[in-house]
Amino acid sequence: MNEPHWDVIIIGSGFGGSVSALRLAEKGYRVLVLEKGRRFAPGDFPKTNWNLKRWFWLPALGWRGLFKMTFFKHVTVLSGVGVGGGSLVYANTLPVPKDGFFAADSWAHLADWKAELAPHYDTAKRMLGATRNPRT
Image 1 (cartoon, rainbow, N blue to C red):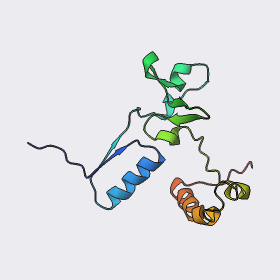
Image 2: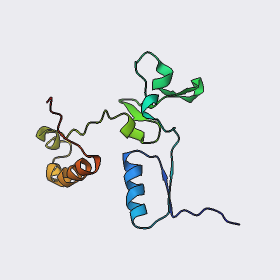
Image 3: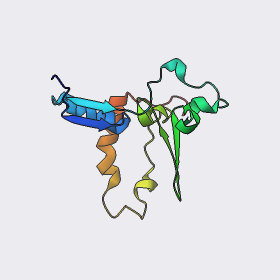
Image 4: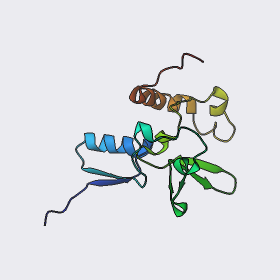
């Protein structure tokens, strides 16, 4: 029998999953990416915020939009559901935190986070083709 074989199966096609799939495929691995949401074409995105079923992912109600809200005790997480995951809902922005964020007492003692993360921000900017917004 001729059954498909995958070296790696990645769950989710968001930023982490898609970059992982790319890097592994570049090294010659056979990669399968599974995504619970659908592929959104440019014309599929909601034009207003009034049609909630086009915005939100609530399968129990038959809603298959691109936003999923997960409620925890102290935080609510908005995530993307569809091919691209979080890249569907990040508003095409790549903010780099201000210096005060990196120096926060909670984690400043663990590493020089600004220096540690700088090359990764540079890689993300290059791979995403990020440019400065001329209006800022």
